[in-house]
Structures are given as C-alpha cells and as structure tokens.
Image (tube, rainbow, N blue to C red; front, top):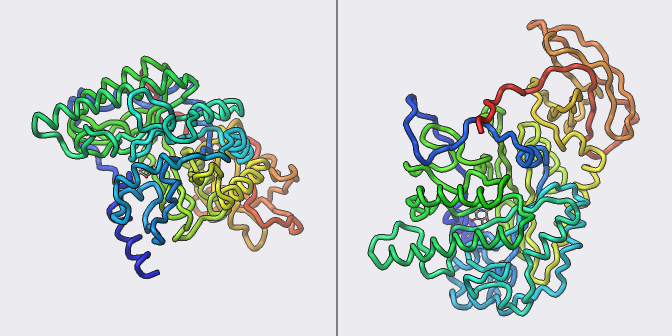
Length: 482
Ligand code: FHN
C-alpha cells in the first residue's frame, strides 16, 4: 500500500493537468493578432443552448480500459488513461492492447438512456486521447477501432444514440498523440523534426475535418493537451485552423483549451481576454467566489475519484457520492458554469456499477429539482450558509444543503431588490410561509422561509421564490460584437 501511495503521489505530480492560475491583465492593452477574436460572450442560439445546459457527461473510453490500471499483478497509482507512461508497461505492450479491445457488452443506447435518466444535456466523448488510439475508423492512421477485434465505429454509435435521446454531443480530441511519429511536445529544432511536425500538423487538421464531416451532429470540439510548447509555438496556424473549423461547422463550440496567443498565453490572452468560447480552466475545481469567474462562460469537468478519467479497476482515493456531486452541480450553476461529470467505462463496454448508481441518484434528484438547474443562472444575491441561489424567468431558486436547525431559511434583500411573494418546495410544490425578519443595520430586508417540521428528506431540496427579486446579473456582461 505504501508503494502504491508513493507511486500515486509521483504520477500525480508528473501528470500535466490543466489547472491554471489566471494572470492579472496588463495595465496597457497590446495589439494582438492571435488573441481573443470577440468582445463579450457569444449570443447565438447554439451557445445559449450550451449555456443553459447546466449538466453534462464526460466519457473517457479507449484502450487504456484493457489494463484498467493493473499490469503484471501491480497497481498503477496514477490516472487509468495515463498508464502508458508507467515504466512497468513497455510501450510496445501498451500499443498492442487494441488487439484485445473487444467491448462485446457495449450498448450505446443503454449509455445514452442512463445519461438521459441522469439529466445531462450534453456529452463529451474521447474520440482520441493522448495515446493516439482513434475510436472512429480514421482514414489517416491504422491505429483505430477498425483494426481492433470490435471493428465497429464507436464514435458513430454514440453520436447516433445520444442524438436520438436529445443529448448534444461534443467531441474530445487530444492534441498530444503518442502514436504519431511526428508528434513532439517540445518545439521542433532540426530540419528533420520540423518536417516531421509539419506532417503531424497536417494529420491533426485532417482528422479534425474528418470528425466534423463524419459526425455532422457534433456541437463542439473539446480540445486537450494544448499546453505543449510545440503546439503553442504554432499559434498562427492553430488560430487559422480554428477559424476554418468554425467555417466548416457554423455554431461550433470550442473552449479555451485549443490555442495560445502569440505570447504563449493560453485560456486568457495577453490582454486578459478569454480565448474562444468558454473558460476550460476549471478542471476538478470550482470557483470559490463569483468574482473569480470573470464574467465569461465556463465549465467544470469533474472526476468521481480525486483524479483519473479512464477506467481504473481500483479507485485508490476518495470517491465522491451523489450528495457531493449534486452540491457541485448547484455550486457551478449558481456561478454560471456547466458541471460535467466524468465516466470511465470498462473494456467490455460497461459503465461501472458505482458510476451507474451515481447517475441514477443524480437523475432522481434532477427529476424533481432540475428546474433550478436548466436555464437557471447566477442570482447576484448575497450567499447564505444554507446553499446556493439560481434564478430564471421571475423565479429564484434556493438549493438548501444545510437545513437550518430552526427550519427557517434566511434570505437577505436590499429594498431595491424586491420581495418574495410566494414560496414553495419544488418537491411536491408544497407551499411555504414567508416570515418577515425585520431589517438589519444595513437597512436590508430579512425574510425567513419556513420549512414544515414534518418535511423529512435525506437530500438537499429546492425552495422556489416567486415575485420580483432583482438578483439577475444580466447586463454585467459585455455583449458580443459579432
Ligand atoms: O491529461 C488529461 C487527462 O487524462 C484528462 O483527459 C483530462 C480531462 O480534462 N485532461 C488532461 C489533464 O488536464
């Protein structure tokens, strides 16, 4: 166990992760050719639909599921999808796992039904992770699903099944490709390296257009691995690629993990403006205060164990329960972010029982309380200790995680923000009494929403307030110019 923990600590330390400290913008703006190309948030229908989703599903599935974090009687201490970097497995062994990848129990319709039951509005699927294995039959390499015993196009099966359930599909694509000869993480220096990297760029571009052509239902591309010096140094080419992809697929959504500006700044350019459509820096992390969000769209992608996205038969760290995750869903949504929960199916094609249980529990909660998530946004009201506010269309939602011992949920509103007229529980629409709580020294009005003593639940619950409460942040954002 001691060895496992040591190797876990080492691997976690070595693994790049897109955790990111946002730099303060410079005092004086500088002229940029390859920085942000838009002022303010996107206002089109595709982006609005994404913004209103609230809950998404991430699926990391590839040949790393074959070893599933184990090899030769030893347990890999890192993330399942990174097992190829473990010195216990020779690369040529890993690179032949695809010959055993035959997920005979895979049922795309079953996965999509579970996602629907969980209440997700979009799904992100790993078409190709860092190992370079393509889950679709790419014509640009042999290292694909077509040459595995399974043979069938997994990306197509998933795109079709999820689209049928009304769930949008975004395609994850790794810029890192350990299987391509021309790939390198550092900047190419010699003429041979430069030529090889040019080949890799051509290959990457071809694969991206291939994905958009083969799966026209795709709503977005979710890039990863763009921290490489080689990729960053190609900022002008990458910028053009992004523009060409958008031309090929109008409405395409691309997050901030795709490209750097001419000064190597990622996510936010040299002037502190968001690059591309939404901030992807909140990986396994949530902003503590709304100020940290910087008035942009964002998502939080989260693992069930502490870290680890692809299948690992043995979760070595704390695994979140549905209560933890529902808390995170509301936390993200109360700060205008989408919450995306990761799943790592096994090599046979099954979603693991622990994840199935979580999906069902979250789904049962979302069925009752989803109204406080879908299309609901930040409320700009002073947070109280009981939980999170969200707001939409004249309704204010109070998601209560810490039930006050006296069963009175406190709301503090300056007079200018209006007053609640009606309160009820989303669970059963039970009407609730609004009790006046006087004024505080700042002349703010206090209200207490009374929860019936006999309302018993072991879950967080949502109170709806109706009446004009002007918490909305609308107008805080700069509107898009294009
Ligand atoms: O290295 C990857 C990791 O395996 C996983 O795919 C996550 C998902 O956001 N991205 C990288 C780390 O930031």
